[in-house]
Length: 197
Image 1 (spheres, rainbow, N blue to C red):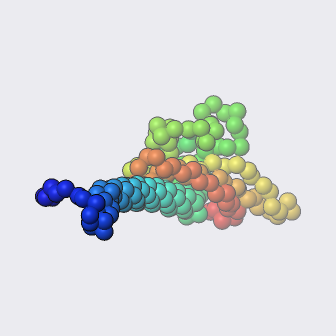
Image 2: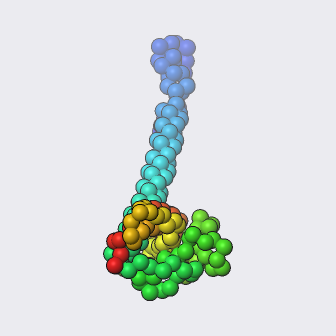
Image 3: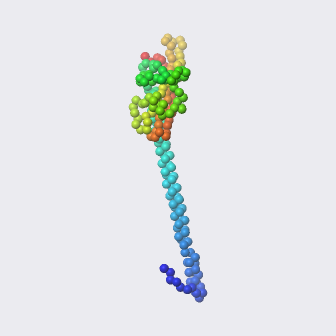
């Protein structure tokens, strides 16, 4: 590689040049290694960040799917009563026939009445909640709903027959593409007694 030669003081310029070369040996290598280390750290950070962003996007998609399924099941629950021609007879628990799927929420003392729905788990919803009329198929489980009669108000006292308004609360339970994103949705709606036959 390098030829060994003896440096003599008779050649001061070449002696200084060779001494400088000997001192600079390895500096470029250390600089290159430091740059390589910095680029490696930047690359690992970029991969970690993109992986985290991918997980966040997946979670958001999961939440949106749960929300859309919840909105859909609420429309199903409201449609159940809006399309009925006869007034349902609320019971605890309700009958499984399509036109009688209404819980009696006006008398919470009745045995078997609707418990606090915010504390209920998947098993309760799959056992007691009603599935949609058309399966969604995009979520890990089909959404479920319950409808409860919460209030009956007389609108016109002087009318014969008296007109009453029935207030219902629909509660929809849904999950997203995985069971980690869950949604609990409620809506309150009413129907007048003269809208029934």
